[in-house]
Length: 71
Image 1 (tube, rainbow, N blue to C red):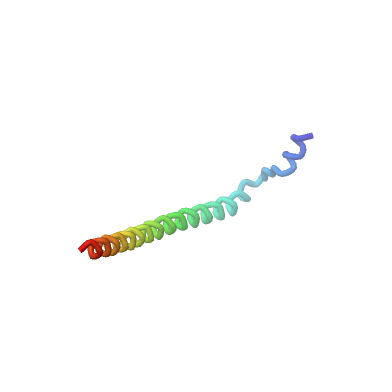
Image 2: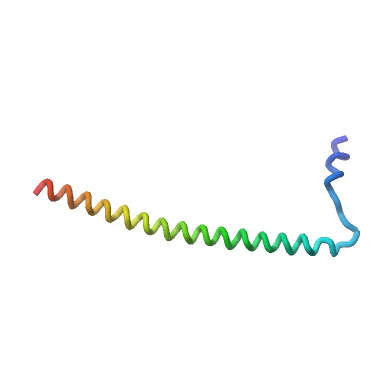
């Protein structure tokens, strides 16, 4: 019974040219996913750099404030 249910979802066409549109759309979505991930990684690195610079600036201001209170 289990094999019959699973077999209903499988379809292997005799004319293999039906695979061409599926392969093209799969390739398009794969390339889009790759470019999207690269964009996200690049943007994330830029944001990480900005955050580090902001943290350094805040740390310098805090150190300056501490030094001013001890002076």
